[in-house]
Structures are given as structure tokens and as C-alpha cells.
Image (cartoon, rainbow, N blue to C red; front, side):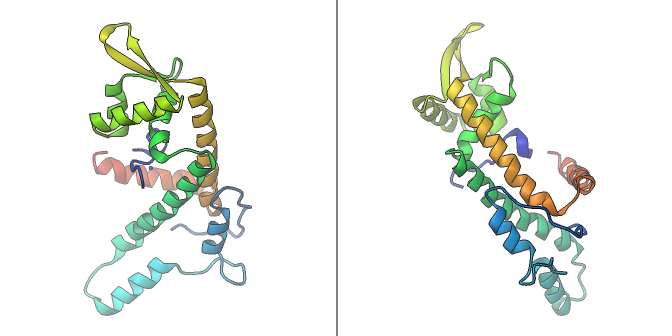
Length: 208
């Protein structure tokens, strides 16, 4: 979730660390789901998760294999699913589709005057030219972006945020950050930094 804050989700329709002794108050769109998933009936954090059970079961069946990668990447995969639900809830609260956030956030991050060429938008959102044209058309119809002729290239155009678009994406990013903050409540700030560094190393190793 693109690095997460540099492009949002990339679909239109659509890391396990030692836990602290206390769990903070959840307030965002995913709060109820997060509480149910993190605690048992007695309100305490379980000692094991589903990945532990899956790895143990595989180990009993194939004790000749090393299942260490599953311990990490299966949790990444399951977390991605939780994140997708939380992000959709956050975007719903802002009345925005994930693909709309992709485009609007790219423009917002560009800084004043919050405009980019369609080519740059393509590079940042990783969609086809036809898809981008359709998205810009729909956002224009909603009054969230506007087109103007590129003064440096009379044949080109620039896509810019309107005031309504800036208000919408600012609200959406605030809701998104709260949803993501809720997911990370069970790890400290230092642990989050450590986790981010480890994941960055893995991603860089993949050439991303």
C-alpha cells in the first residue's frame, strides 16, 4: 500500500513482534475488528496466532522442511488483508474510492500548485494511459480535479487539484493514518521503526 503513502492501494475494486503488556484505545474505522482479532474472550492477547498453528501443522507433516519463511511472509500476507479492509473503511468514511485516492494523493504530494502531467500520474499510479484518462474524466466530473493546457507545451495538458479535491484527499489521508495507527497500536514506536527498517531491507532487496 507503491510504498504505502506514495500511491495508496493499486486496485480499483479492490509485518509478528513481541507484544507490549498493554493495548491502547482504538478509535478508527477498524477499531472493532482489531479488538476482536487481538484479544481472546478474557480480553488478553493470545500466545499464538493462526500462522503459528499452520506452521506447527506443516511441521508435523513435513519435518524435513524449514518453514521459517512462512513465519514471516504468511504474517505479511495476513496483515495485508487486514490493512486492505481498514483502508477501505477509511476511504468509505471519506466518500472516496481507493483509485480516487491514488490520483488525488499524487497531486497533493506534488505540492503547490498541486498539478502533474498525465504521464507523471501514470508513473506514480502504475496504470495504463486509457485507465488514467478515464479516472481523470471521472474526477473532473466530480469537481475534484481540473485540466488545463500546459503553458510549456501547447499540445500537453496538466491535471490539477481543485479546492474540493484538496479537501477530500486531506480528509482521506487523515482517516487512513488513523486506521493504520489503530492496527499498529500493539507495537511501540521503537518497534515500528525497527519493523519499518526490516521491511525496507526486504523491499530494496527485491529491487523496488
